[in-house]
Each structure stands twice: as structure tokens, then as C-alpha cells.
Image 1 (tube, rainbow, N blue to C red):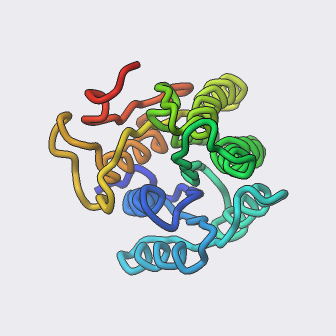
Image 2 (image 1 turned 90 degrees about the vertical axis):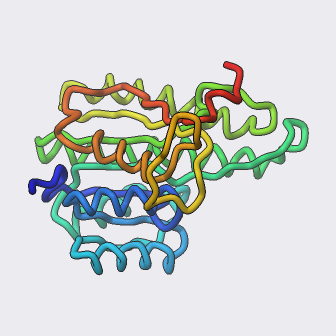
Image 3 (image 1 turned 45 degrees about the vertical axis):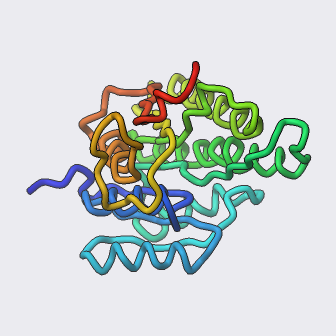
Length: 243
């Protein structure tokens, strides 16, 4: 059976836990060689170890994607360990639940740095490598329902994810002519610890496995004409919000 991502090289930030871990494992299961990036070394090592235990190829890199120069370090690590780069998944993120007037300067700065600035710099560095190789590539940004729907209790998160939606579209236009596709997946509220569980109904929450499957599709050549798109994966969350 042909795997969709055979021999492709992928970076997944936030790859040590939760949705990032689910995406890293799903990409590897379809043949990608994955660099799982996380602030916590033990977490990304566990993910890489689980991939290898199932016959896949993965390595771990402990890094804070908000630190100066780390975007270049992450991309160089993927190229050095696997010989190239075809896929970047920006999944690292922070979520601060506070009322608008309770948000601190640190809350704001940390959220924007992680959810918006880090993806920007990683896109820049990944695109340089993809252009040099001349094989195109796929960049996937994990946004959120809060990239389209405002919530007064997560103002910093909304600002970062609205911004990431805009960055996705702008980068898609900037990189279209070099065959680099830039898309986004916008999950709603997800079931926790659901990397191995499929969603049952649009009346239920979306699962991490559902979102990871979308990432595999967008990373693959099946989506080679799709760019600048955001796939909403809200599940039952859609029925509880007002746009």
C-alpha cells in the first residue's frame, strides 16, 4: 500500500504533546520522516520513540520556538538529520483564558510570540530551503475557531489566531509561484487525549485524530493545488458559538 508522505521530511512544532503529537504520529504513519519539536525534551523524545517503535522515522528536538534564531536552528536540524524539508506544521501554541482587562503584558507578549511570530519566522526559514531544493512544499498553520470568532475571554488568543489566518493567506500568495502551499486548519474545542479516536458525528467534538488526518491530506500531493485555504474543524462547537 502506497503511503501518502513516503520519503517526505516534516517538522512539527508543539510536537511533544496533544494535537502536535497526534499530527507528528499521523505524518510518520503515512511515511514522513518527522522532526518533533517541543520545549520539553522528554515529551518530544517520547513521541519520536513511539514513532520509531512502530517502524517510522522520527527525531526529537528540544527548542523554544519563540527564542531569537531558533527558527533557523529548527529548519537546519531537519535538513541535517533527514536531508531536506517538505512539510512544516506550525502547531506550537499557548492559550490564556482571562478577561480583557486582566491580561498582563507577559500574557500578551508570550501569546503573540508563540502563536504568530514563531510561525512567521519558521515559514521564512522553511521556504528558503524549499525554494533552494526546487520541489515545492506544504506549510500548515494550526489556527483556531478563535481565528474567526471573537471571544472576550481570550483576546490575546483571538488576536494571534486572526493574525495567523492573515499570515496564512499572505504567505500562500507570496509562495504560490514557487509551488509552496500554505494552508491552515482551524479546530474548535477538541476531545482531550483523542489521538487514536475518530469523531463520531458533527454533533460531537472534533478529535485530535480528525485534525491530524486533515494535516496528512494537506501535506500530501493530493492537495497539491490547494493553497491559502482554512479548513474549519469545529465539530459540535459550531452549534455553541455566534459568528
